[in-house]
Length: 420
Image (tube, rainbow, N blue to C red; front, side):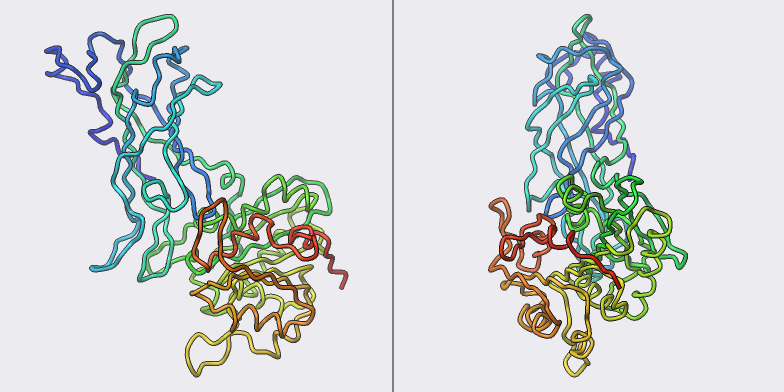
């Protein structure tokens, strides 16, 4: 994360101020008590379409009680710049870089006396995201973010004069849902994140296997252990209060591929197993309650895991997963005999308007071959009034939407046990 202090961050000082010239917002530096610096935090949330910075918190508690009447949406301006963390080849494209002003929609004091500037954001809106997609690599990367704060009007303390800040220093990116997942590296070198619900015995374990865009790009030495939790709510859904209540507490583990699962499922399967065994050994996991869930590439990998380790999982939820051949004339990724041998209770999910992974040749075909499999098909992917690409059907699972005869998918998963 860049900690650059832009010239935009520094209020006009020096010769101009000495001469009594007007500062931004038409107030005088000489009329207010100046503070040399103020740190700020970027506050983010992971939306269904990816993580966005939704607010900025200025560490103003140490300034003393501030009069809320002096704090408006115009008191500060916020500028944001997001750039790729790795060099781009000539002609390469990265989607979602930006360099723009962020609109402040509300300004308030939190209970610690810090200033919170709420920013305009929405699903699909460019200018607040933390990830960029590099087209040639098919990878999401965590963008380098540089936020610049400019003070336009003085603050007033309840008991004292006006305050101006000379410079603002960017701190960390805070996303409580993501930050709840600890960082780990397996013995074979695969990185993963882990949510822990507590230390009571008998907890379930949900294994989340990400899509192709969230793997590493090791030719660029890029292996961040971040995008798996920031690109969508696939893993995070299972660590919400609602999911934890339904599962009566569940660990959630999110391994990150060193490339993409479809590259070599046979090689990745034992590496994922190693992580599962490590988490079970070190934590209060009931080995009868291990569930595997994955989207796209991860949908393939969730089925792959149940073909290789037939007695390991209590349930499997492949979302828009791949089973067909990737190229003409090549063998299928998961041949019918392997699918037919799956014994794990399986619930497949996809959207019929998926133009990335053909639902007929993949999800529907797998449903027809896997013994006893369940399936939920959607016409489109729409949540909270926003229509997403048809491939993004994992949104529904992250929101516990699929249901069959009144039983939703999380409740179904939580009711499965592997007593083999």
